[in-house]
Image (cartoon, rainbow, N blue to C red; front, side, top):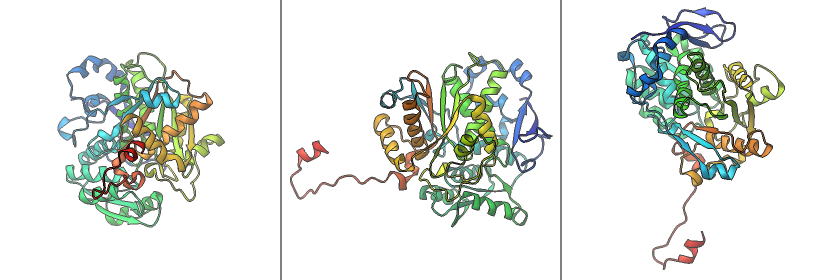
Length: 408
């Protein structure tokens, strides 16, 4: 089938680069994938989706794929969009939804980005990749690398959740932990590039993870019958998902698929333990400074310096959104609240978004009847350290105390 990619474009200065060859960054900043959207609009109609499987590949006219046989897939189905009436009522909202990315093949939204990144790397003949990861990206890279027959190296902070470490090892990736943060691990990848001959798969250091992540926005639009919500809260570390969704909404508007010109206010959510984007937003800066001594149990948003900082901040401001930091000490409580109210295995990063709604609803920034969406970027089961909560014990050598059980 036809591929509608025209070129790659530097996000920092608009320089055009060829799309038909392996690219990384321009002036140490990320690249956009650009499409002939007029051609897409003339050939890609909504009705065509009816006969396609419910996977992210259903939007292939808006993806950089020319040949379906090229695709490296683990069956990336559309993630469910779940109405959350009880949680919404507790937070003062009548129209709250969670899009549950934990049901993707590797248990997180990282399946989307890695499906595209590994597919494209494989198509360009890459044999070895490397990346830093503080959470789910490493496991996804290991899984998709294994699927493609690509050798993967993953470098992680030593306090990365153990499940994330285990899945990298079990996925066949050569996995290393280091006594530092994700930016320190990124330095290892960068310094080893020439010696090891690997392709750097770090966040936004290749252009295709954005294209995978943008399918969250494409799916959301389709699931809401092409009427976008009022507010999207997104846990923001490297920010690829937020950037990708904003790109998706712009592309959908350009091809005339949206029911109205309204686009969501994008909210970047971080923990007070690591909030460089929030600090830059509040100062009115376009670029963020390194957050010193970053610490949060929400490992996916523990990114002290994001290479796409200006892209995140541009999207937030263009949308009329904001960046907000929540209290680190309350994240576990918000996890329990969301899970006990709705039965959704909410990860710490998504729990931070629950806290952000609590603040933004109380201040009136989010109105009670506004349609609001949280992205649950991964399953709570991956965060054993965060969810540990011992059950109460019964001694079978004693009579069961039913009053005690009822009062617990």
